Length: 237
Ligand SMILES: C[S@@+](CC[C@H](N)C(=O)[O-])C[C@H]1O[C@@H](n2cnc3c(N)ncnc32)[C@H](O)[C@@H]1O
Image (cartoon, rainbow, N blue to C red; front, side):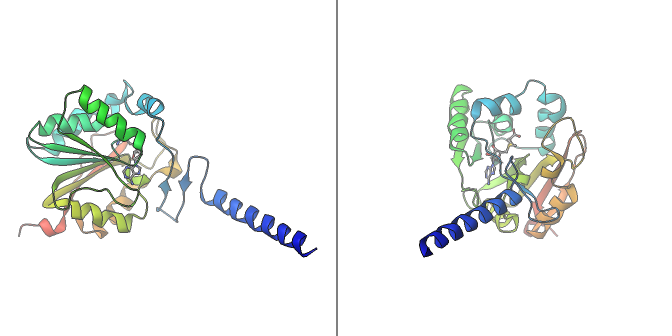
């Protein structure tokens, strides 16, 4: 009798915790921590499927990668990072901008994408691309060694950003920049569902709270905001 009662209790506890998991995370792995604090946890492991999305031939029409790179005013020989590099869409543009004397850390948490980034760098003969297998909670960038970190459509996937953003600041040189390009929180013909997106003001608030100031905000992208932050300890008085 006692054994049956214990078994029933175990089944009850298990089903309660499963439904709690379902309530916190939808089919796309979207997690709601409270107003404006959403994190999307979907998997990007399927390289062939995501190549069709990230490297779609029509993406340049709205992503305007050449204009984005020109707005960053990069110099040959600089060290930059593409955080959440995906299939390497922006990694390639960054690599051409900094040239062979520079370095591009292509940071990813998906081992399949890191492998793809290495193959793509070899195929495109861009040895300045250095793929990094990061952890969810640390970018594994060299401390104080990076001029600019570009984060395209990835900020809303980062967990525990109040702890994570200081790690990005620590990777930057004193005058280093953190650039966030992410989806405008409005219905759009491209991008994730509305509730996966973070409003521009929310991103500005989180990044400035972590020791950055908003230096520039070019407004030519139709679907994304484009925010260029600088470490505040880099201010020249
Ligand atoms: C929507 S994709 C954007 C890919 C690329 N930036 C682009 O614009 O094509 C987001 C990428 O961020 C990666 N990612 C998610 N969390 C990450 C983290 N904590 N550190 C590094 N990469 C992460 C995912 O694996 C995924 O490839």
